Amino acid sequence: MKCEHVTRQIADYLGGNLNDSALSKIEEHLLSCSACKAEFESLGTTWEKLGKLPEATPPATVKARFYAMLEAYEAGQNVAAIRLGWREKVNNSLGRWWPQQPVFQFGLALALLIIGLISGLAMKAPSQGNQDLMVLRSEVYSLRQMVATALLQNQSSSERLRGVSYSYRVAQLEATTLETLLNTLDYDSNLNVRLATIDALSIFYDEEVVRAGLIESLTRQTSPLTQIALIELFVEREEKQAVSALKLLLNNEMFNQTVRRRAGKAIKQLK
Image (cartoon, helix red, strand yellow):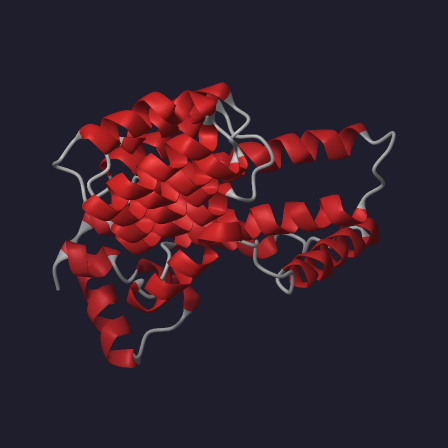
């Protein structure tokens, strides 16, 4: 038996989980290999010390707090999805082509669970005179933005879609996250992701950087669906600053005729 085979079975050896045949082979190897024997003895000492540690009993307050967070988290799973407004029909019509949700990596799943638990605590805690709650909320926003940004940069389009939808859950996005969303709108190869990004950015439309980015993005879009979605958003928001971009769209024969007609109508509506 080689050293690498032996070291892979250290935990099973110390835990008494090996059969007689494997156990005898390891013991035979240890008689002839001083390096493995020294490593086993060192780990065995540590293993014994760990076994002698007293079992930790969490305080009752910690247990109660955990169950309160868990209850609030589970309750939060039943909250209805965010309404998508006038773009709901567009997204729903494309929904059957959206990729199914893949399995998250363990670390990311754990991060999302922690965020959910902290959010549950925030739902349970008093809203006034609680500095701890303010700190928790700040941490929740930071974690959510971190997760959203990471997902938006994922190679999987379904994960990028999840990143866009996750940005809905942040009350106020940092400039870097908004920039990531705007870059997603301009350069993402997946149409569904770009349409969902328009939805997400519309929530933060009052931010000057978002308004400017959406206007600049209009002539960069290559899909009539995203172009029309942006035009409808500008009309809904009565965005007069978008008129110049709409005129460029109207006067460029390279763009889709339906889009150009809608741009012309929007110009009249915004004047």
